[in-house]
Each structure stands twice: as structure tokens, then as C-alpha cells.
Length: 388
Image (spheres, rainbow, N blue to C red):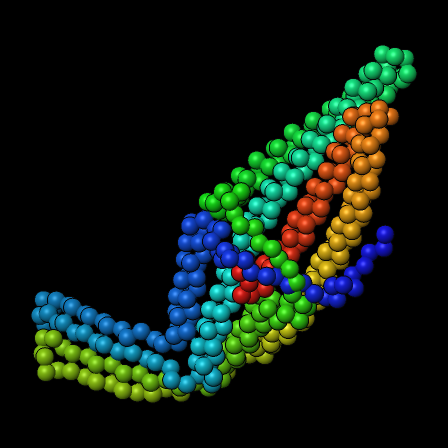
């Protein structure tokens, strides 16, 4: 069957369910994210006002055998008031640093939420796969019994029985592997969430269009902010090689002679001459230009990611169509074999094998639907303001 994607036309959409996404995370995970966010805020504040110099206090005490003791203290400050745009750029850099860090934490949170729901869906999928294998096991047992009888009656060679035994043993091994996988998934889920994975309200995700995906893409937003941050850093670097002005003031007191004080107020203008100016400013400008080019590359990668998901969903829908067609065929066969069994032409084993095969296809529909949700979860993890 040919794969068709025309029904999607670049669209995926997420519908929110009643449970807010972050509720699936454990308290420890949520607390860790909140502490990271608080650190980002404090780092931003420290950066924003780093151009402000501290007020210094100096105290000096000496005891001279000849002159006696002396006790002096001085309070002073030297403060830049103009740095050729460097002060303004520093404050903008701090704001962009905060925005980028906050988005980074949001991306990290969504990745955890996505992982938790992916695990919960995978546990459900594994349960269905175990049911499928149990149906296959029933058919394998029927086949094994029939071949044993045929061998006893001289109708089959021993190799046919041997193959039937190997098939049954292979299914038994597959069930054991799936049971292990299920326990592994549950343990991984417990690393992220304190909820019972079977009690989690699984989201039903549908479509969002390409334009919304692009505009709400968190990584693209973060990269755009990082570009502004690099530009601010370039302006700061440039300002270090341009004229600057500062004021200074100090107040001194001789505590031995309390009337002996001294106040100094001054100003300073600096014109730095550094032969590294062109090299250092050129480096940060090149970094800025590279970051803009990297953003375009990232946009292309995200567009191709979306298109790949589009193709995967279309493929799963094609599988669903084929499976539903198979179910129609199995239903017809089941009805015919039941009728034939009622008059003794077919056995109950024949009926059971067809019914198990039909039920296996019904379970395939559930698996394909889950796989669609897993693909859409990857879309959800990349966009802003999405709750599930």
C-alpha cells in the first residue's frame, strides 16, 4: 500500500487534557527545577549590577613607641558612570541571560514530563504486546497438539513437530522478555514520578500546524535570545576599548584627632589604547555572526524533525487502515468457520485459531494508536504553553 500524507498537510495539534503536565513529576523533581529557576534569577541580578563598584572601608591602627598610637579610617568609592554603552549592554545581557536560563529550565521540565508520559504509554503498550503474545501462544499450543496427533498417526514428519515446539518456546521467551521490559519501564517511571503509572491520565494528543510549531518552538526561542546575549557581550567587549568616565570620592578621619578629616572628590576619563582591540572585538563579532548562522541551521533541523514525524504518523495511519481491513477479513472467516464447525466440517480449534488471530489484530490497532501518541509527545516536548 502506498504511503499517503496529504491528509496531514504539515499539521500536528496537541489538545490539552484535564491534568496539568507538571503534576506527573515527583515533588523532588519539581523542587529541583524551582531551585534552578531561582538560581537563574539570582545569577541575572548579580550580572545586571556587576558594573556597580562596592563602597570600601579601610581602618588602620598603629602604635609607635615614639609618637604614640594612631587610628585612621577611610570610606571611599570609585564608580564608572559612562562606559560607551557598556553599562546598558551589561544590563541587557543580564535580562537575556535570565530569559535564556528560564527557557532552558522549561525545556528541561518538558523533557522530563515527556519522558514520564512516554514511559507510562510504553508500559501500556507492553501490556498489550504481552496479550498479543499470549494469543499467539494459544495458537502455538493448538498447532503443537495437532502436530503431535498427526505425528502419532503417521501423517507428519518429526521435523514439523520440532518446528512447532521451537515456535512455542520462542513465544514463551518473548513473553518473559516483555515482562522484564515492563518492570524496567515501571522502575524508570518511578525515577521521575511518584504516581502509579496505571493511575496516570494519559493525554490524547492531536494536531498542530507547522507555523505554530515554528513560532512556539522553545529551542528556537532560546537560540534567538542567546544571539541577543552574544550581541550584548560583543558590545560589552567593544566598550572596554572605548572612552569611559568614572567618579571617585573618599572621606578620611583621624580618630585620635577627631577634627582632622579629609574629603576627596574627583573624576577620571580613560582612553584605552590596546593593540588587541581588533583581534578581541573581531572574535566576538565572528561569534555573533556564527550564532545567527547556527540558528538558521537549527530552524532547518526542526522543520525536518516535524516533517519526519508527519511521515511517521502517516505510516501508522496506513498500518491502521490495513489492520482494519484484515479485521474485516478475519470476521468473515470467523463467521464461516463457526458455521462450518456447527455442522462438523471444521473443529473448535480452527475457530479458536481464527478468533485469536482476529483479536491479535484488534490489539494491533491499540498499539498503533499508542505509537502515534508517542510521536506526538516528541512534538509536545518542543513547544511552549502546552499542557496535557
